[in-house]
Image (cartoon, rainbow, N blue to C red; front, side, top):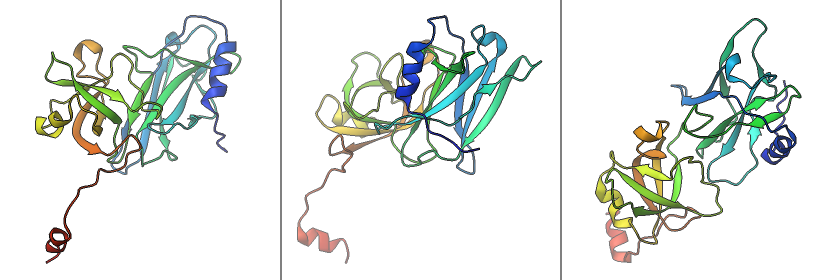
Length: 238
């Protein structure tokens, strides 16, 4: 079956045209398997869906790139007749390994229109994942002044790094403080590597769990240059 990308803007327009009704819920959990394939698991029950809805769809967006989202499920994931729910895993063969990826699950109403589900404390209607060593965030970090296991981040504006729901904070309990403390409350731009946190807010360490913090020159991601002498440079190759 040929895949036809659907811009998120079109989806949002369809959403505005849809009736304003309470929405149902569905989970999306994403993981990278040992073969470095992106697996997207969608799971919902008939009772999770708004009355009259037929199923769900999943979209993909590239984190840090302001590109239109596309559906990885060009056709709705429909609950088979006689079944109470659906639990299906999709291998996303077209994800971009050079960036983290944001996946969203959508409801599909009786008119075959995708309807945006609310993001919040759960179920997890969105998920951010990567199969490669790429940053999940880029911006300027600051001290929260209360919980030493978390830092705040002001994301690079206009570059589409936003995917947090309840708070734009980063858990740094697994990172050596010497890696990030010199950059706190400064104009230095950093990239943060780690994993998306899906714990409920009361148990969350933040929007993501950091494993590494690296300085970059600016919000375009350029690597900061280091000034050195020609003699020192030659000495590195002796």
